[in-house]
Length: 385
Image (cartoon, rainbow, N blue to C red):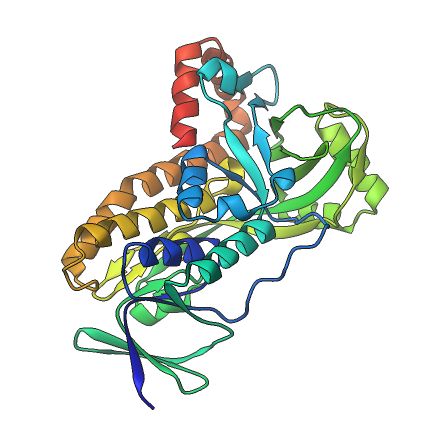
């Protein structure tokens, strides 16, 4: 069977993979995207997978033509964030005080995925292989041959692994990774609130736990409760009324009575460090390239940063062979610092709030930050980038 030749073949059409395909296709590169199955069309039910998209990544998605395809009625801006320690410490980050329109935009994963898929189909610059499964990958000289289960053969100068934390592409390339479990799980569920949230996100640190409430449109909110795995299992097993009461109590009743909208689910928390994000003819993006603690909600934002950076680097060297490791090293260097900084921040905060002996330090630190508007404004600008 004849093979099709592409400059870039992306494996995995999740949020980051789809965004990367759009970005690369718009740079005039010959791009193919391989995915096991197309995304489901969203219904009216709330998605339990919720993301806080930074303004910088919102602009990136707008340039790709995806953001505009989402239902604006299901996008909730975050105007302020109240963070509370386990005693007296507290910090409020406010968009108005920082001179910006909003801190982040809360979106549902399924709706953003659907918008990206619509943009891909409308754009037409990317060859979609879906549903498709890879049978084999063979690196031959300067080309990687990908054979699909239906017998199709794709030849690629560059293979991009966007296939998640358990990346087969990373494994195939022999790029080692270190998995560090936190011994915790994140419990997620959505609730309807009695009291209006007014676009405020809440976060509490207590008893080694981190509880976050993210505002959703229609006076609803999405909860992420990072806690010991045994406690997470207990929370998931509770009936709707009991779970709502426990979440309400843990959040000091800030939004009044809560009513469960979606069943609670739990996922393990872990840090993933990858020894390298590139190799000759290969680049990793998104969760395939790195993993961070979800307390800052920055995993998908880092992934979009990867996609944008890779597209920019390849555009700057459009006459070069896309799999040239010297070109790919530019991408790796550009992304190394943001990823390392976020991993260090979230990992450090996790241990700071897990250590009961550090209670005075962390609460005093939060109070100190809250009294310095310029420092808070700097934190907001960093979080938005």
